[in-house]
Length: 609
Image (cartoon, rainbow, N blue to C red; front, side):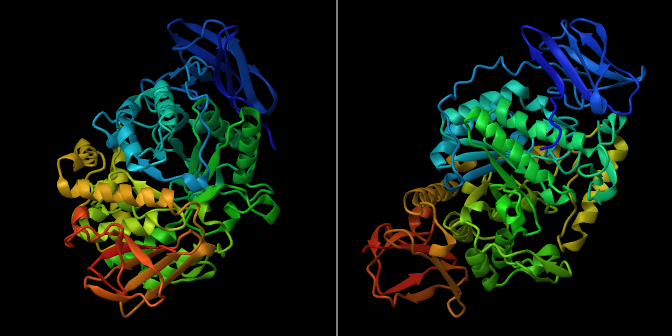
């Protein structure tokens, strides 16, 4: 592994605070303490352009800047806290002061994860980590085993998705800061829930970005959709890589995070002999040996490349899992009929069949939308390595009006879609509010202070929607109203239909936990009957067998069970108890030789033998 060096402000009670910063171009670097005590400390230059020094005056709560070349005063790139925002002083934090109570916690294996993605600012009325803690009993009751937090690194203002973060080591102050996040993780572990954190290593936000004042953090070799690429393989790249390695290790070690979701890794551009992601996994493996805990790295990518998750011995990077867009797109296009933009490559029943059997649909075949061949074969990769969903922050929030599936399909179809995700062999993920059919949208929002940047964001959002035939006017990302309109209502307690949907989700999740234990693709039979417009999905590895019949049409379908097995109905989504039209309770009833599937419905059968 390459250079590994601690950076930032490291406090210990017996010594004080050691400040370390990488600034290879600087001729002098000083720490300027502003509060509660004032001090100017000249740092000593060390190898590779690192500067370091010890202050006995600085401690937890101390505010400081780095001063470069006796004139340029900037926050710490590795700041652990920015209590007054992205342009103001950094704050010294004592990571050892928190009293953890999760000593007996062990991370959950991938096959046990049922992930719930949420945005801290819009999940609860408070919009804080403490607000999430209050609702953990509800998530536990639902059957969730892990929450996934959208990025919490410090961003400009109080409203942001988190992908405009500029201080990757600092926890957003308006969410509750470092201690607030630790309390949330501790509470999750005590409730038996794992915590996944979304981190961004492919770009940095624009406002408050002072990295170029310190050194060559960016390279002109490549460009990304967000501007110049981070420098992972050019001159001085060892130290940029170290910056992000240290960041990942901090979340896992100091915040007890169980898994990191690595945002858009296809934009981590690295042609070196050892890819950044492979080396990151090596550092995480080393941390596991030191702590005795197990950590999970999950990549987000749209390239359908198994190299990310294949073992190093097979030429891979060794990551645990990756998101799988093909699964989402196959479902979305089939149930909504949308074919604009990147959805043009999807929309046929055989796409859904293929993604259930082989994971990637585009597995080395030509993409009409991209005008090139895409992907590799993932058939041999275990199903647990793929995180799937029918909704997430990207697929909802990057629509012009942020509509959830609640607004796009019928109530009955919502139940069919839930079954496709939760009863698939893959690692399922829900997006906050989908379990009860939240009606508020999830929109894109920011709170920048730079007027030119605000206008650029507004313009950029409109251009993004050009490939889609969406009607209406995009809400203003800068408006607080846009943010508030994206907040969950948690209205299922007052809404019978929503409560029925939530209870249905609970039942599906319980079925997965008790019957579909560690399901695999190799134990799956799946085909689509065109004349019936019914998807047949049978898990043969469970004992007894489980058969799921998905009617995705708007007409009832008559199904003949021709295998002479002794089936019983475990669940009928059209049952009145789930808000459907069928009278009578179908749960655990005997299945007849001929079954009638109501329009847009799911029946789950279990073989009694």
